[in-house]
Image (tube, rainbow, N blue to C red; front, side, top):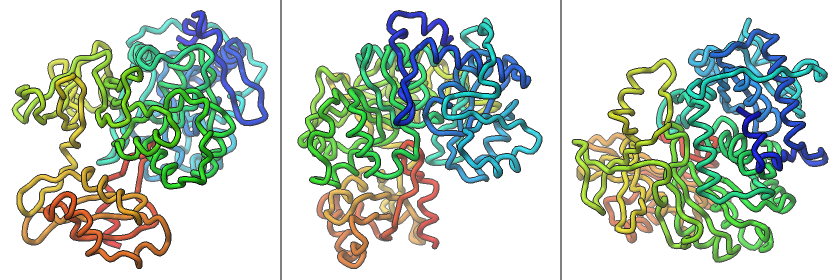
Length: 499
């Protein structure tokens, strides 16, 4: 599939810019390295239909591993390299890989112990596996319906499932991104999502080559904290940036410590993966003048299926935009379509979506019905066709008053408080029935817990949302559990109140 992409006029301009100090690789050289890696994997017994695990950050090794695996007709299953061993054991049991590719810079001893007799194949920073002089053979003829990637869902609310994505589905999604975002030849793309996420894999490995962009690699150790990330942003001068909404919050909190010219070359910043706070968008745009395009998609929808339009973008638009490449409907609990402006669950229908959950036909049948994918997200549609997210059905807190309260509206208000940097809200069992609203708060300084009482925080929320939505339990913490794409891991929030 890479060969057919590279032959297109725009793709011939595709460049990968590796770590600082290393030369950029042109399309022809990238293609040679992919063929060489594919030959090495074949020599180790990887066949069409196999699955290959990958452990590493975004960068050239991940790109080569993906395309070499796909060229054989196998499917790559990237995992988050920061996962604890328990999560890795679960991943291994679900994927049952032929072998595992791991970045050679990593300590592989825990992985060798975990995988036992499973082959562990190192890949260096230049994407080389085995003998670098190996001549690559022609790619196999593989049908477009064959699995190309197995991606784990975010696991923000439960044990993650494995979504199987075909070659055709990924290629279509890559083209949809290029067309919807108007990405162009020669533009510099900084894609901060990692390869085990939909945006990390699709944007960098498919959309960037299709558009003929210059993809800037940004491994995790080069963006370990917000200060190193600011340094990276100032160095690369990217025209297009894809990041989690948390980046906006962090930059806004830094205030004057961020140089105003940091985004002088940036045409747009794209956010997905979790809720985008409209106030943070407005603050960011007022300072830097850069549009923040909010887009929506699940791993199950092969990413992008709704997006704001850059040409009509407004900083006060709190929607996730308009459907692209799909049909949508909004339904009540009986699957009846609701009236325009009413709240309901978002269903999506595409011509080429996910193939299903790996080895889980029951879960696949529950989410896919009559061609419609049930997202689990509650939304409402405006008269102009744009869609606004209300919340996720599974995350509602059942207050003792029997009212359903969604955490995100409370979190948005808490983060308006002058002492609060981040907030996460969940429900705790209440002996009176229902659930108590509980909040974890990260302060802007170490002394915040002593500077503001729980009563003052509750009053702050009550004045804005009413007493029914004011937190009854408040705890200041050093950090909030988040997934790699910035989503709050809600399944772990209640644990923080049991410490």
